[in-house]
Amino acid sequence: MTFSIGSGVFTSMPQARMMPSSRIFDSAGKAPYVDIIVPDDDHQLLVMESIYGAAGVKAGFTEGKCREDLSKAIVHLAERGARVAVLGCTELPLLFPQSTDFDARETTVALVDPTMLLAAACVRHAVASGNSSPNV
Image 1 (cartoon, helix red, strand yellow):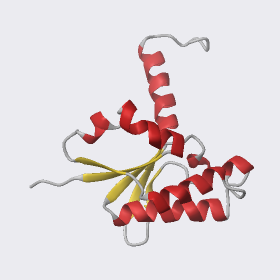
Image 2 (tube, one colour):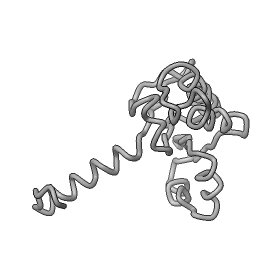
Image 3 (cartoon, one colour):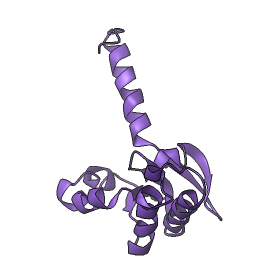
């Protein structure tokens, strides 16, 4: 039996433009059973609006239109097969925190906060190396 886990990736537009040349997600996308899915142009604009819009997170909002826009984009990726959404812009987890059970209408999607994962990995590395100093 074979299956794939669709992983949706959200970034801001400058990061999205860099992805093809930087190949940030290439190795993950080549892993067995992982398909990288990015929003179409209309839904990428919703992501951008949720970050940079007049009622976006950078304007100090964490409720209302910014959450609605990002939710629509997450549902869009879920409808295209994503079961995991990587919140690849540091502001996005302020709208929806990392979770395993985001309700994307007819399915459940896991939301991943890469900044939180990186911080946790740094702490694990520091502990494993025996360095408990706060000046790591």
